[in-house]
Length: 143
Image (cartoon, rainbow, N blue to C red):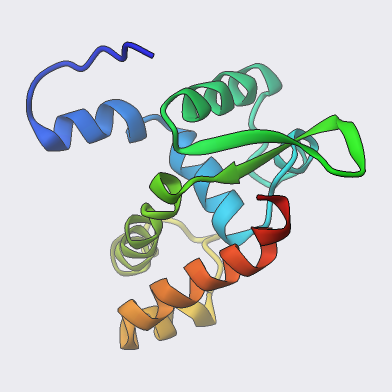
């Protein structure tokens, strides 16, 4: 894939890929909410439109952030899994969660309280490793 970037800046280049409204939501859903199939994503609270979901999954696959395979017992259902490159985004998801708790909560009256936030704040590195380990344990049978 020949991806077009706006400039040579590392932050801008990362945002060219991750700065979309849906990309980090999809990655968060895979990493934390165990979403793996197209149906799983469409049934989530975020309510992403199917055409946008298809486009974003294809883009993430082309960029090597996720892989697409079939369920072993159902060849008609595609299974989406994070690659090591996708899993490497875990610290970003954790940092965004902490930032949101500290800076967005006052603006979003419906934001849920999460006991995980306190754990994240007290030992961020251990929490990140726990998320990665949990993801690998839940998905290792599919690789």
